[in-house]
Length: 231
Image (cartoon, rainbow, N blue to C red; front, side, top):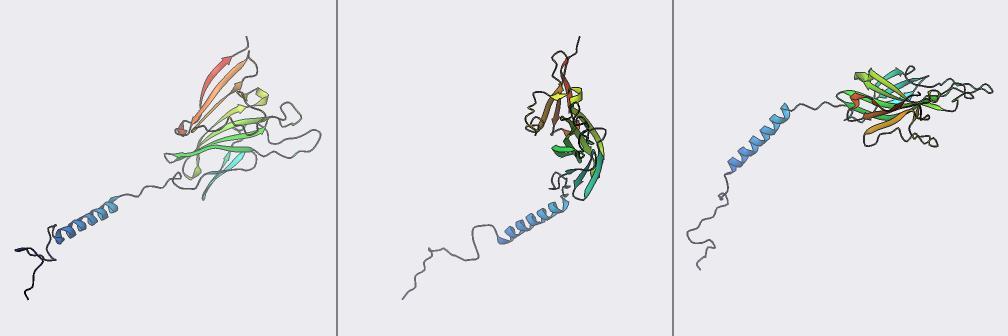
């Protein structure tokens, strides 16, 4: 019996021949791509790791008196704010013994930019050392801006008193039933506080403090909102 072929007449099929590019061309292209990737990886410089990329954040601790300790991983430093913080910590009561008051500290912001660290702190201390005296129950508030270099070394600092009972300096429209001072906080990355002498309409001195965490190097920008002196 005659055997019939399935292939068309005059046609020929081979598993080693196809209409695509030769195998040696594909192999050459793959080798060129691999060599290019290796060369690019060898030339690329690793990006430096900054503290903003690292998870280590600066922690603030209160120590003796008006000094604070900053800690970030293995780095630590001690900063004396005695000349910057308004208020008294060595309290006394003429009628009874009283313990020393620790410095209240609230971190408003911490940010790193251009290899510098910036901190904005809010501190609170008693207005009068004599708790039974004038303003004895009030608390003075101070905003502090710190610029830190390598190893948490202090490079600059600024302090602004935004509440001082003895000098009639208060935050504008402050809700004194609230103890957490909601006015002193970042809102969409910005801090704005209006403060000054606001109790006497005939003797007013109102200022506005502004801080932007996108430009922490500027520190506190203070402008005068209203000024009216007694005639």
